[in-house]
Structure formats: C-alpha cells, structure tokens
Image 1 (cartoon, rainbow, N blue to C red):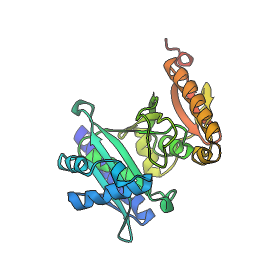
Image 2: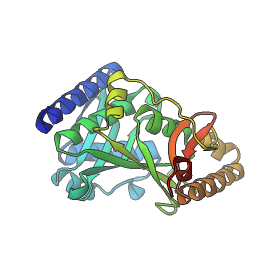
Image 3: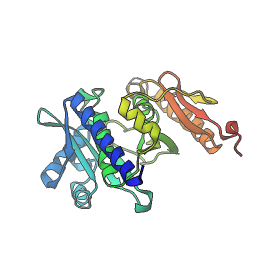
Image 4: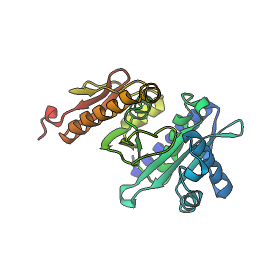
Length: 269
C-alpha cells in the first residue's frame, strides 16, 4: 500500500471515529472562528477554571492571533449551547506536532464522553494537516485524567515537569504546585488506531514498579490540604527518581497508580 493511500485511510478512519464519538454524546463539535466565537471560547474556559475576566486563561487578543495563524480552536455544542472547548498550537514544523494547550467541559457534562469526542475531533483535524503527534500536559495526581490519557486514548507519558506553570490562581489549581506530566499521542501508531476504532481501553501491563496516587486529589485538596501537599511531594519524588534512572511509564490503573518499567529490566544500559 502506498504511503499516500495509507494516509488517506488513516484520516478517513479518524474522521469516522470522531463523528461516531460526537454522535454518541449528542454533541456537535466544530472549529470556532472569528472574534465573537473566540470570545465565547475564552468565556467558557474562564467559567470552567473559575477565572475572572481580569485573570483570564488566555488574553482574547492572543486567541485572535492563534485563530488567524491556523491553530486549533474548537467548540462542543449540546442543544445549541457551547459546553466544551479545546485549543491547540502548532509546534515546530520538523516535529509535525500539535501542542494541545487547554481543553475543558462544563462540570455537568464531565464523564459524559464529550472530552473524548473533542480529542478525537482534534486528532482528525491534526491528521488532515499532516500532523502525526499531539502532546499535552496534565496534573499527574488527577487519576481520572491519567486513566483517560493513558488507557482511553493510548497517549505515552514522556516527561515529568516540576511546577511547570509556576503559581496558579484559578479555582482548580490555587494553593498547589503546578507539576505536570507531558504525554505524546502518536496518531498513526497501530495500537492507537485499533484502540480508537474499537472504542476500547489499553490493557493493564505488568511492570517493575508502581507509583500510587489518590483516587480523588481534587476532593482531598478541600478536605485535607496538607495531605494533598504530601501526595504532591511524594509522587514527584518517586516519578522523577524513576524516570531519571531510565524508567518509563508504561501504564496506569486506578487503585494501583502508574506502572513503570526500568530500562535495566529490558537489557538496556
């Protein structure tokens, strides 16, 4: 099969996967364009993150630049109401990578697979532009996000970023260090293709070590802030030590945590 034909088939399947995922949620997902629609996106994300207009997630004039220069700005609608949004920026051309900066869904629809449909829309958009990889960061203590990114999407954790954004003042992150885990989603990986086409989950692998995280760190930050801070320090120390020693995060399971393999376990030096 020629490379061009293979590209077309992967794109066609990605488009089908995205359309199916959106249909199952009852959402309409499309690109947003123009100052009015871009302002809607910022207003929604500010609402989701508990930000004021004076402390917005992103200046509206900067979003205008992102839209003008062909970056990814998408919205999810249910019954005509904007309930989710996602923004992505082109990385360096030689990497053929889109960096997904921020995505969010209103709290009443969290867990309803709208975020999954948004991600599949983003994937189809990227592939249609010759982009093979999407990367993004997430808080490694949030188990539902770890489960979604690693097991549902098949993304690969590649780097631990300590206090990546510095102090944050939104209602979700305030009072905690902004540690993040960088993941890469290889859009043409045969394992990812099969996973998304079947709407299944990555099997839980066996590894040489595990790093546990709380099942609901967000609730803990409210009920026991000191314990939440201890979890942050403990997970940071364990993951950075294991990764710096050549370990790789190969899986995640709620109740177990991150599953890692050490390079030495595979005969590497």
